Length: 548
Image (cartoon, rainbow, N blue to C red; front, side, top):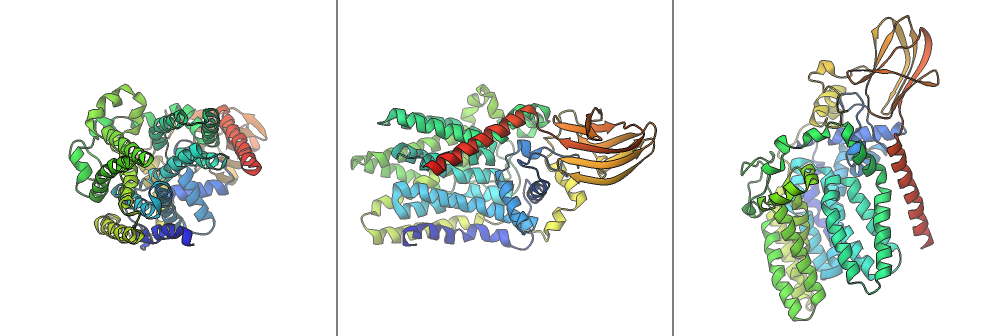
C-alpha cells in the first residue's frame, strides 16, 4: 500500500469531480441519450447479440445500427453495470465515473514515470480536474470522448516502456490501450493515430536495437487494429449506407468553430453549445493554473538541460510541442490544413483538439516538483499547496447546471425512446429511409397487416430479429417495421425468401395459410471478415500473454 500512496491520493481527491453524479435524479446535457444507449446495449446483450451492432428501439423503433458505427466500449461497460443489477440511470453514472477515474489513474502512472510520485499525483489530478473534462461530463455528456481521453496517458506510457524494456508486457498494454481509444471514440482515434505513428518512428529511430523495436511496434499496431477490427472495419465500409455524411457542414461546419487564443485562458462558463465567432455558450478554457505551470515547465526544461538531464528536458519540450500543435489546430491559423485534409471534416469542431492540449498541460504541470525533489518534505508541502490551489480554482466547474427529478424509468418510456431520444441522434438511419416527422410515423407496432386479412401469433421481438406465426388469407401483405439495411434477411417456414421495401421498411406477401416468419440480421461479408479478424487476434493475443 505504501508503494501506491500517490494512486490512493488521486482516487481520494477525485471525489469532488464525481460526487455530483450521485445526486438524486440526473442532469441535462447536450447528448441526452446516454441512459437509453446503456439500456439498449444491455438489452441487445440479453438478446444474445455479440458484438452488439443493432438496437431495437432507437431509430424511431425501426431497429437502429448505432453500435455498428458509434464507438461502443463505454456502453459495454455501462451495460455490464446494468446487467449485474444497477438500474440504467445508475449504470450510466457509473460509466461516467469510470471514465473520469481512469483518466486520473493513467495520467498518474505516466507522470510518475518521469516526475516521480508527487509529480504523478499532481499531473493525475490536474488531468482529472481540467475544465474540458467538466465540459465533457456536465455540459456535453460526451462519454465517448471522455473515455478516449482516459486511455491517452496509458498509450504514451506503454509506447515509451515498449522502447525501454524487453518482453511482451508493454506491447500487450499498448495494444489494449490503443484499441480502447478506437473503441471509445473514433474521432479521437483518428486525431491521435498520426501522432502515434510519429512517436513510434522517433522511438525506433533512437532505439539501439532497431530490429527488435520494429517487431514490437508492428505487433502493437497489428494487435490494436486487429482486436478492434470488429468495430472500425464495418464502420468505415458501411458508413456510405447511412445518413451520417449529411452531418458534415451546416451547423457543424469546422469553419464556424475555431477557438480564439484568449478563450484558452478565459471564456465564460456555460451550458449551451459552440457557435460561430465568440458567441459560444460553452467554455474552451485550459485552466489558468494549468497554463501557468505548463509555461513554468519550460523554465524547468532549461534548468534540466543545464544540469545535463536531457531526457527529462526533451520530454517537457515534446509535451510542449504537442500543446502547440493541438492549440494550432483549434485556431483559425490551421484552416489551410482543414481544407487540404478532407477527412478532418468529420471532426466537425476544431476545439476537439483541446483534448490533446489538456493532456499536454496536465502532464507538464507535474514538473514543478522537480525543483524540490532533493527535499522530500518540501516536495510534499509544495505539492499539497499546488493541489489545494487546483481544487480551489477548478472544483466549481464540476457541477451540472441543474438537477432533474427523474428516475431510470422516466428515460426508458417507449414514447421517450422511440421519439424524443431518437430525434437527438438519427444519423445512422439508412441513407434513403424517410426520417419520421411526427409521432404518428414512429414504429409503435413491429408487425402490421397492411392488406388483406391475417392473424399474427406468438410475436417475438429482439434487437436483431423478429419472429412470429401468421395465418394469412389471399393477397395478404405484411409490413415489418424494420428499416432495411444490408444484412437483414427474411425466412418463411425455414427457407430464405424474397421481400420488397415500402418506404425503406420490409414488406412481405406470404402465401395463404399458416406460416412461421423470421426476420433476422445476418452478417454482411465485411462484418464477418471483421469479426474473424478480431477473433483470431484475440486468440493470438491470449496465446502471447500465456506463453510470456
